[in-house]
Image 1 (spheres, rainbow, N blue to C red):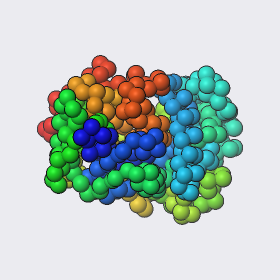
Image 2: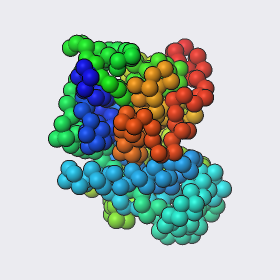
Image 3: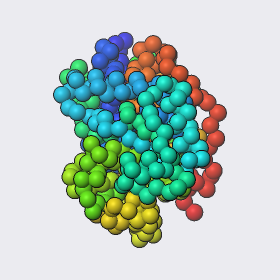
Image 4: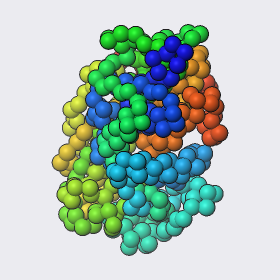
Length: 388
């Protein structure tokens, strides 16, 4: 290993880091991983029982081939670990028929030759009575859609990486990353080690370690909530599937996984910025609770509108909505993987394999130049980076 403690270190073992550790170890590299908290913790984006999987793109058509490849890798991880991680229950995107996101999803399905149905308002009302459907609404089905179990996925990937020879440390905070001509020095409270490459996947806390992220990856607080339905049978996976409403409101949800409650996520305008990631605010205040209640009452009439459970997580957002994935502009030995804005989980296995490509081969055949950290990316305005 040319005087290195291992071929590669992975810093951050959430979804992206865990999958990178698995794919690197699977491909024969010696891997050391570091997680600041516990593996499978609830302080980042890889929590909340479920994460949506879909192959249709509402914005960037280059992500559809990545989602299809991720589907195969999710199944490969399931075979390797014996755990069901992806539940393919189908899904629907719905909203006013002229909503750009809905039309983009339809276009991506047509362009990629994906099975789907375009449903008018009457068809939506019949097939998906869980939703309030207006006369101008339409929807598109996605038979490939489903939900992932995030905590189980992260723990399963890290356990499998260990069986392949990876050494993973939890509750170990990385203090500094220092590249030089011979590799990358990594400093923790326990000492200093040297690696050929380092993968930085620190999630919403990217600004602690990634200079580029200081102005371009903004930590935001995301609240997830669970509701009690009047008729739980209307929300079972074989009936309901995953869903997303776009246009008049941006909300997503899942069928019940516990036989009692239904999870709904509601996008707030610019999820609140977290200036102190050491002590993020965990209380859900009355103003947000009112917004959640009003939205659920209007668009999901079959649910009791007051949430019975809420959780708070942190996600990193870039100014253009795309993550930083690729070599750091100042060192090809450092691979950046951060700023996934809450939408990276479904792609995590293929992103992990792309990271392995970049470490092992110095390049990847996948079309991901639009994610390169060296791209032109506007910084967040100064008033977004520090509290008023």
